[in-house]
Image (cartoon, rainbow, N blue to C red; front, side, top):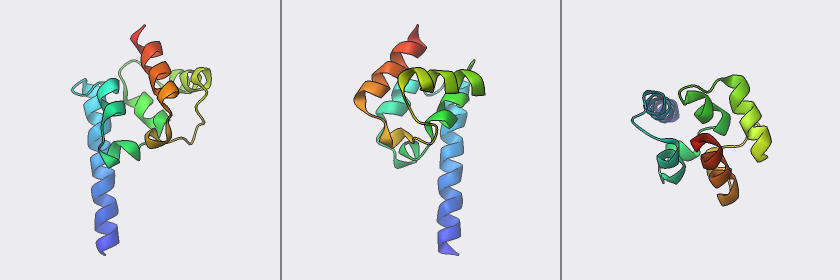
Length: 91
């Protein structure tokens, strides 16, 4: 039961992060620089789809351009991939 409660808490925390990204109260740069373990566990595609104006297709196209695998999590991104994502989304 404790494991189920812990998993539910982690899912709720990740949902909150995605909601904050969608509403604009957290920027992509803040999310990528965060040391919150819940941010690190998010899949990159899920995080990108949470951003305003980015849907499933655009998120996957962006990941292909940068060279990020579909199943990659935020904690697994390299410094080059992070900076490439930020530069492509700023322009």
